Image 1: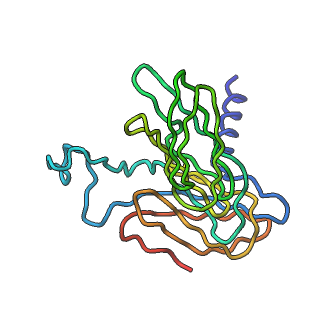
Image 2: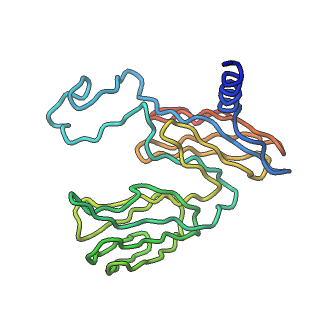
Image 3: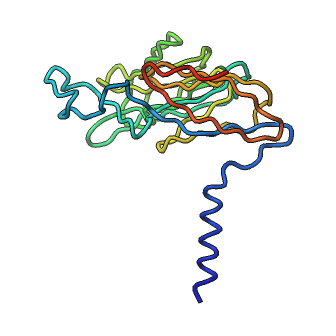
Length: 229
């Protein structure tokens, strides 16, 4: 009686580990893992643990090496996807904040900000030299003319900011579990860059075959090699 359900579960498990789907005809897909690696000789810990047990470091934001946090993998030298990212000003009983706290979009795209609170707020986007007051329900579209990390701030709300990464090429935001996938890109030799806000970027060159799926596992941390050609 249990054979059919078990067989279905086995098929589902197989599908979960089978990897990405095949790319569009003539295109390529690249995927892999993204892992943070501590400096050699350092044991990661929290504010109360060695090697960080120091009152002078009580306000330091410690790295959770088990989860990468906000990170982006992108291909340099290929056209960035156009589009727009959505950012909202939201308020709760405890605080007013920008949501999400971090997001990515292709360079040359746009960032749309909407004030979803009941009061006006002053938005600052230094990368474009913009400071503007947004009334309740008002929206603003900001062009992302240059690539790289850019900050957005609420000047009237202390410590309220968001990070926008404008990718110069096809990109993927790393999941909380440390996986990423860039689908349907131009095949050939590509320059892969792994970006994290708190660590130096790591770069790799890899050849992508037409109609192929390639895997590249990335390790990011202070002192990590750039990777093989």
